[in-house]
Length: 96
Image (cartoon, rainbow, N blue to C red; front, side):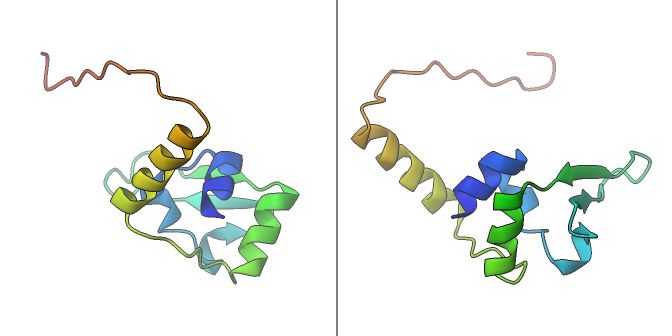
């Protein structure tokens, strides 16, 4: 269920943990405050009717699992649907 919520809001996995009743602004959007860099403005994530109903169903506490298990489930679903293309992964560290 929270995969659908994540798709509708565009939120990262780590941001989903911070969703609660205090972060929801008048049931219109989720206000995310930057923890590390307070000089950046707050980010507002608009809520659609489906995402609002998901929040209502779980009383604003999404039933999250570990990120690793979540990724494993997504990989299993993609394999079952036939998405088995190889993907090249690159990582940037510093200037390299």
